[in-house]
Image 1 (cartoon, helix red, strand yellow):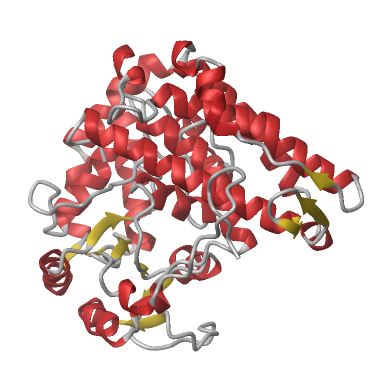
Image 2 (tube, helix red, strand yellow):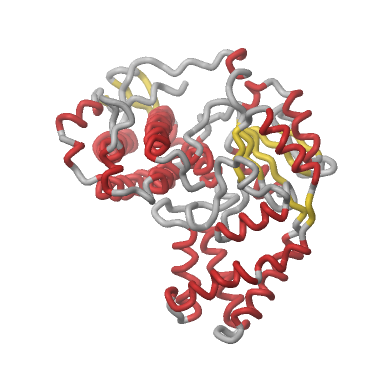
Amino acid sequence: MLRSPRSDAVSAIPCLPFSLAYLMTLTLLLDLDDTLLGNSMDSFIPAYLQSLSSYLEPYIPPENLVPALLAGTQAMLDDNTPEKTLKDTFDQVFFPELGIGEDDYSERFERFYQEEFKKLQPLTQVHPEAINTIEEAIMRGYNLAIATNPLFPRTAIIQRLEWAGLSPEMFPFQLIPSYEIFHFAKPNPAFFTETLACLGWPSGPVVMVGDDFEHDIAPSRLLGLGNYWITAERQEHWEGTDVSAGYGKIDGLITWIDSIPKDALLPDFDRLETMLAVLRATPAVVKKFCRQFEPANWDEHPQPGEWNYTEIMCHLRDVDKEVNIPRIQQVLNQNNPFLPGIDSDKWAEERLYYCQSGPQALSDFINSRIELLNLLDSLEDADWRRPANHAIFGPTNLKELVSIIVGHDQLHVQQAYKIIGGISHQIEP
């Protein structure tokens, strides 16, 4: 059972009653290409590469540009670390491959997306049934997040949404990922947890909707999310008969949702793959939340007596460094060790968190979290079952201890999300 997200709280998080699941808002994670927009990547990507190569040919030979683009894209797909955005990862490969400076060419790339990218629109098709489905979802009050692979700049994704008849100016998508702000790409499970964390870890059912089995459906099923596969008919590698897994055309999505018990679509965060993906997403998302902070924003309290952003970052840093990492090491290196209870909440006052540097605390937290992830990423199945005796919880094991860290992460991401909402009514999606 997942314990309380407080570091060493005694109470357990109760299972959600079936009836309450119907009262919570459903969240739809929506792929874009060949889901909301008719756009075959087999045709679009070659045309895109040709257009970009032609536009930049006076400056960069096409025979050099395309390999560098592909190398940068592969680096984004492979990246599994939370400290860099996908753009950072791409730029660190792409520009050195070409032997050019980013500052010298970034303006030319921006002009390409302003002037030339729109000429690719005839390769795509509007799906009126997708528009109708989104309108129905809005009427029902669903949370709507675009879940396209964030391998493009934001302008390229916004333009494709406009080609689909789903302009963000008209449709209230709560999140639109792009390579400037995201840290993980599909099919990395951390893409999906980063998406949910960016939404403030909404309670209630979650459904991933997409056409690509390997990038949309398989990883979302691995994480215990509901999923709806945009396909005309069930195909051979559709393995499950789980009630939370549906398939069909986009105009069948709402009908399918209505046929499913809503508690069957509640995410399962007790799976190892999910837990690791949550832990990986947390530092990425709390860094994203404050990317446009003014210095004073770090110290703003959402309500009297509630922690500000600096205090949250200090808390996450110290709990990882002084509680989570030492406990994991103790369980791995000792036989059924005794783990004393630790009241880390009082550290905020004792250690004068409000006087510390929020940006430095965030940087230190990211480093500590990478250290923690390095410990967990190397574990064998038997390691997760290693026992311990907790002063408050009693007999436990490493997997349950990590599940407590996951719940603790989610609690403080929600807390950070609330602070961001108080600072700005419209965060950059």
